[in-house]
Image 1 (tube, rainbow, N blue to C red):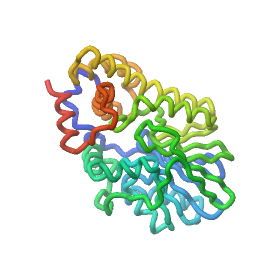
Image 2: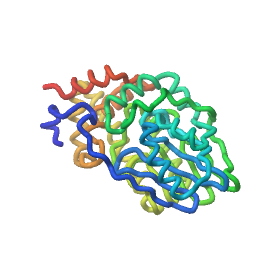
Image 3: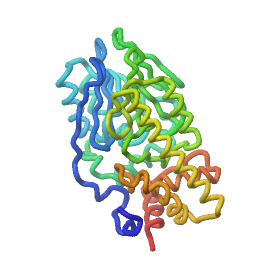
Image 4: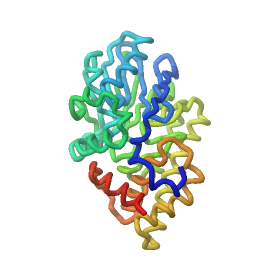
Length: 326
């Protein structure tokens, strides 16, 4: 969609009604990627005695498809549910796993703090932005709360299989968590890494994000499951995903800094950002959905607002229609 006709498009992704095809991809004897053509991905780790799910899908009803895929390869209990961050689309399906043996819902301290601060507002906001992703939203019992919180890193032994959950730095949010199988160099990055999909940065720490990506690169993952987009199945593809995400967030923040320095309005900043972002990223999944939120947050950060302002359903609409008007 061009900038010229963006004023007529529906709010966020309310017009996105076409179901995506899901894929359940074997990465190793212990690891699987659940991907969905640019919709949020999930990860699965199968240990000797139990299963771990990284990101739950958006609702318990939607989680049933992931559970069906897991049950096609193992009958072990799904003992661990890991939240890569606090966004509703990643966490609200958690209750579906309790019937499958889930005993722990694990998150970083930063993620827990964000749920406390803004989980309720985020839940309402996301559901209204992207109704297709919340199919069966009536099955959500409420906010998902961690039962176990770690500060920087924790190690879980699933039998003999070691899995590390690590907050290596801020980026997509202040609490981003990756899941890492060191013996196989397989990483589940959550939305720290995207590929062929827009990076949603409405709650991001854009200044820190590139350094966090470089810390992730230093781990030399051989396979990586990004938050959105296809599974990256070789070291070269992993680096492409890291480069792609770094390019997206650095181009965005630089454009915002230029806009603020020039005294532009938010609408002018949006137009300025589009000049450099549209040619490179205009074709990727959820770009038109993300960009207004991305530019708003990037301008805030360029103005010195370090901690992201809370998105509410009302603020979403006010920002969106303010940018699209005229």
